[in-house]
Amino acid sequence: MPRKRIDRIYSQIGSRIRDIRKTKGLSQEDLAKAVSLERPSMVLIESGRQKLPIDRLYAIARALDVQPKELLPSLADIFGENGEAPVFVHGGAVMEESAIYEIREIVEKKKKLQKRKAKQ
Image (cartoon, rainbow, N blue to C red):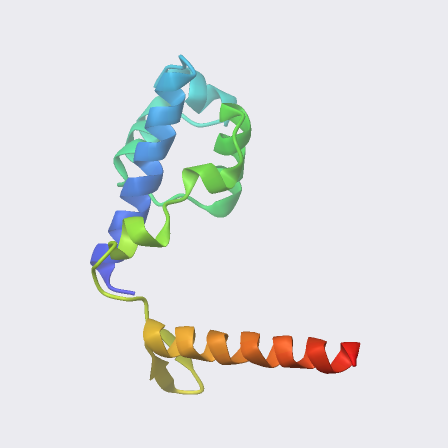
């Protein structure tokens, strides 16, 4: 994944943490203490300049009384609604979102057919 997208992920997470923290009426100092950090680290996390290990993300989510997924950006936040489609690598081949969509449609049709046969 390009560096720009990686930076966008951490920036989005930091923004979500900051917004939720403010909504809950907590200071950066309060949140930092709750997760055993110093305030400067919380400043860096909220600005997206400090990478956030997954265990710290869970600790922050717990301190904010939210589910960890609420701190994570959506694919649209990272890739854009009409921007570049995510690319998945499988067996050395590059697959675009449209190809994955077609495969999912085929799989769903096959599942429906198998259910019909099972009912007969």
